[in-house]
Amino acid sequence: MSLDFYWYPKCGSCRKAKKWLEDQNIEVNEIHIVENPPSKEELNSIYRKSGLEIKKFFNTSGQKYRQLGLKDKLATMTEDEMLELLSSDGMLIKRPITVGQDRVTVGFKEDQFEGTWTK
Image 1 (cartoon, rainbow, N blue to C red):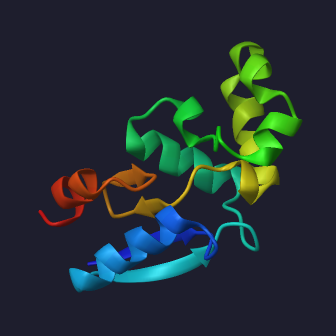
Image 2: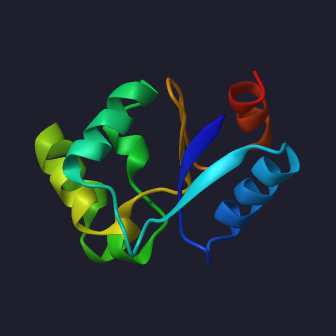
C-alpha cells in the first residue's frame, strides 16, 4: 500500500504522522503541501473520498486563516469557493492529508491512523 502524504516538513503533526507511517512500514508518496498544493480538482476528489465537511480541510490555527478572517467568511462561501481558496495556498490546508485508495485522514491522531491505515 502506498499513500499520498500531503505535508509540511516544519509541521510537528506532519512529522509525527510520517514517523508513525514509517514505523508501520507504510510507503508514502511525500507531497510538500506548500510547494505543491493540491489542485482544486484533486482537493475536490480528496474531500469527496473523505466523507468529511469541507470546513475540516481548513487549517483553522494557521496565521493565514486568521489574516483572511476566514472564521466569519466560511459560513457564506460556496463549496466551490472554498475549494478554490484551499487550492490557492497550501498554508490554508489542514495537514497532513493522507490519501489511500478509498480512505482519507486529515490531521494526525494516532488512534485514527491506527484504525484507518493498519486495516
